[in-house]
Image (cartoon, rainbow, N blue to C red; front, side, top):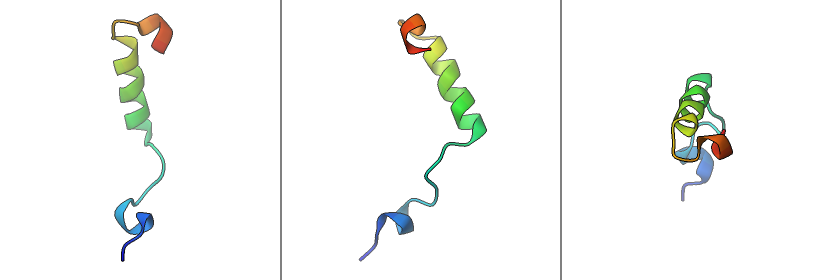
Length: 35
């Protein structure tokens, strides 16, 4: 039996992933609400 730790190696976002998410939120239809 496998647990979540075996499947998912990390529980955090990298700095590049955070920046990518913020850029995506800033360019959408509801950018003022999302960012």
